[in-house]
Every structure is written in C-alpha cells, then in structure tokens.
Length: 29
Image 1 (cartoon, one colour):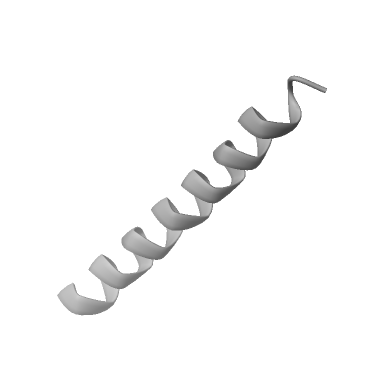
Image 2 (tube, rainbow, N blue to C red):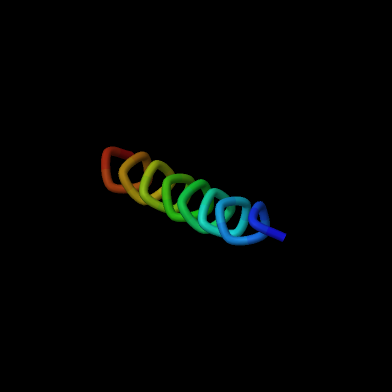
C-alpha cells in the first residue's frame, strides 16, 4: 500500500532521533 513507505521512514527517523538523543545525553554525562 502507499502507507508502507511513509511508516517505514517514520520508524527509521524516530529510531535515529532516539539514538542521537541518547548519544547527546551520554556525552553530556
């Protein structure tokens, strides 16, 4: 369906955002 790609992109973007937030918090201590 046409919704498969947007959902997949949203999942990837959200996971990357979480990784960036966690890494930034880890660097700040």
